[in-house]
Image 1: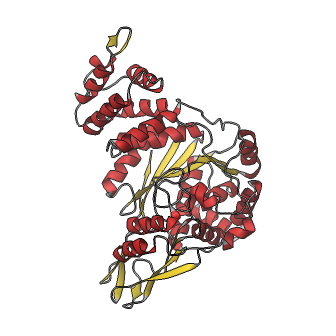
Image 2: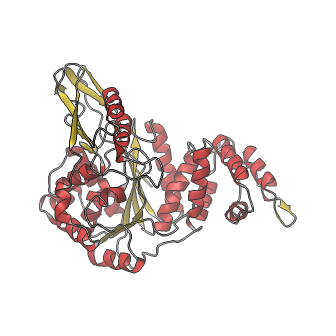
Image 3: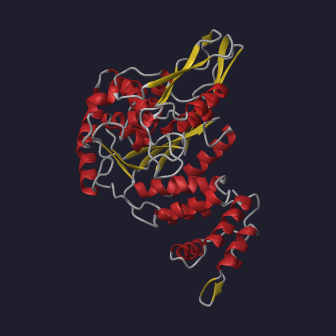
Length: 445
């Protein structure tokens, strides 16, 4: 939010030869004034028509970083971005639900949640992008399953969602193109770190995606975009307000990301771990987070489902059966998902001393997997699905000096030296201290 009380809209709507003068719009925000909806529509409509230059929008983005946006401005900008391209009409599907994570390391929750929510009565019809960063995204993980088709025609996408309760496809439609153009400028001009711009970017794609109920998993810690809990809570509340103004049911969970989620980081190995969870096993933290996220979003959609009931769907195999139906409907070999091939090379990261594992820096571990080839720095980079890191001990575990703490899976030594250096710095051992809780807070509208 703006640190100043917004002034009335004066110069930011000034016409110039029948059209807005961009410099007036930029100057108004530099002075802390509040744009009205018409001014925002005019400026960004001209930008999409290439009548306002990138450098002018960049100047406005910097003014926003310094002055902020009001709640109304943020909501209006979000709705403009959502309406700038295609939108999905899911109104014919019952109890449409979705989950969004602000990004973490080892985060395979969507693979577990999608079939779990479907078994419990929700409908997950989700378009999602590929990962850009140190590890892959949901589509990258799914594409490590032999035969899985990540691109679905709209008719098949909607029919599958109606019949099975879950359909996940790559972002083939042009959802929120204004957001894409703005993000490219933010990335190039050091204006990414603005909470209103982050909130509007996330929520514009969710509005365009069509689901009526949404749970936000806002990560906090070393491997997250938000390092401080207070900042993450402010972002969560901002996104909740945007959703409320748009008529969505939105809940947010703040979850810790100082250490990776689960024990596996890397595409194929994360799929294997998700399958283990769907069969009633898996690491305790992954299971805990999926149960909490799942119950919250189902409840907000009007379905009275408890965490205990969801746990039953994991333990009795029904969530796994729905995963099989989903993957096979999209051409994948579900039976192979539990034993996907991993890179043949192995290396060990040893504990530097005897004591308690006090830290596994998720950010450094994610970068290590990226160095091995498990992530991409450009959208057209190829990902090696078989590389990754398995954590043999989590924070709170007792280890001996030289004991293996992590196992690295590499291919022909590619990126291994860089990965081992990062992992050596990621692991800290010291005196005993209780691990931080996974779920830090739940924020409702």
